[in-house]
Length: 340
Image (cartoon, rainbow, N blue to C red; front, side, top):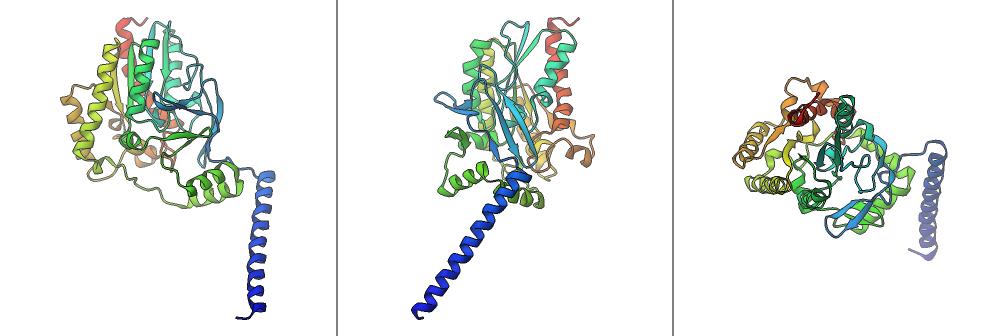
């Protein structure tokens, strides 16, 4: 190939590249002006590193969290947790621990079950305070650390822990904070570039939204039917540690099991795996309620309304629905002290 042909090919490639670059740049401007996208991510600065529990929410923050199916504001209090300021002097205090389900990922504070329970007792003129220490991505290591830190400071009468199966995997793959963002523990160069696009490019997010809506929800790799006996035993050992820690601090401990993918599973091995886990919990004398039991009377269509289509965290309807069981249990404890 002679020099002229080589230069022609190189200039052709450069022309195509520059044309594509200009087109992308123009589309980015058009989207920013006429149809700005909700950039993927928890807003920078919402999370901070912590030597004791790995990472946590920053104190007194007001930040956005956006995904294709939702965009909402997260507000933290002076203790560094989501929700209103805690009231250590309240007559009855409830401490909630857990991950993104208990945190209320995807819904504003007013739609979380924690706030629904608060409002319920306010209407009944009962002095009940709730401190929700749940944080997205938390596993047992984080949750036990938070529990041991907050127990002596808050002195709750009741500790409610919300367990979801991926807590096992979160324990092994704990997230970290980098430049104010919550990121996976083993970031590659591509992950850094993708994170940059997620946080800055409206065109990239617009393209992902289209692909997101076109795909089919997956079953997930953390299905309970695929979890070993050893992992179940490990989970129960951690839950028992949380229970004993709570009891030593003078608190009653109760466990809520979050349904797989928010609204239950149709996997044929699910009942057997669930029964096995229940049996281990009972043998260790851990009091619990499986929220999956509330789904049996619902149709498939009704179940789907309880979660976001792809994200699978509870929607507002999901929080409203499951809050009824939480309220019933809490009332049974609170009213032992007297309900007028």
